[in-house]
Amino acid sequence: MSQYQIAVLVGSLRQDSINRKLANAFNTLAPSDFSFKQLPIGGLPHYNEDEENDPPESVQRLKQDVAESQGLIFVTPEYNRSIPGVLKNAIDHGSRPAGQNVWAGKPAAIIGASDAPIGTVLAQQHLRNILAYLDVPTMSRPDAMIHVPSGFFDEAGNFTNSDSRKFMLNWMDEFVFWVKSHNR
Image 1 (cartoon, helix red, strand yellow):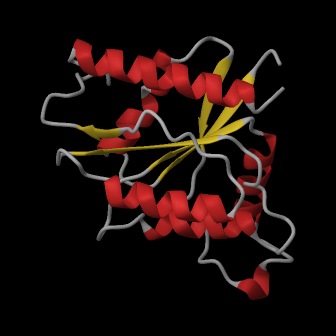
Image 2 (cartoon, helix red, strand yellow):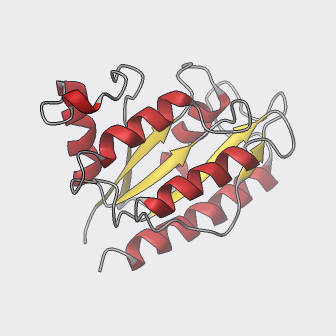
Image 3 (cartoon, one colour):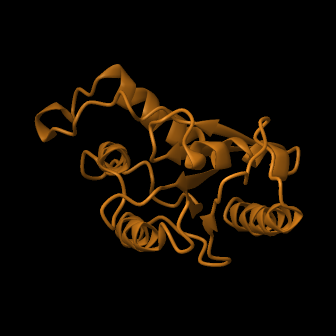
């Protein structure tokens, strides 16, 4: 495969969130045959089974973008010891109607950023449980609960710490291998 399109779902809607900043950095970490598309999930309607056979255009676009991707990255903060509702809503839309799960078989990785040292660990575990049920092969190592203290990113969104950049380059190398091994 000459180009790998990766669908990125960021569980935080705030434009200046540290999780969005982390997702924005992916392009600087990956090889040139990988590109990343952040999928808009904030405007999706609440999942309603009554509408799943005639979904709104925003849901159709989400499902098409996921279907056309060769891999997934879920970038999640932790809200009340779990994933944000907006992320769960997007996952529910993509998994329905029964038998039309666009997530199935897509190699995925989970990463999250927090100003707390082990923030996102419970959110990531909950997300792993959901993705396992939906038949999404999810990279298990290296774990990536990124501690983002003040000054972690510079004004341009670059990592200010070389050890953090080195860790993220290693994480991306593992993700690239994961995606390529599932897209043969």
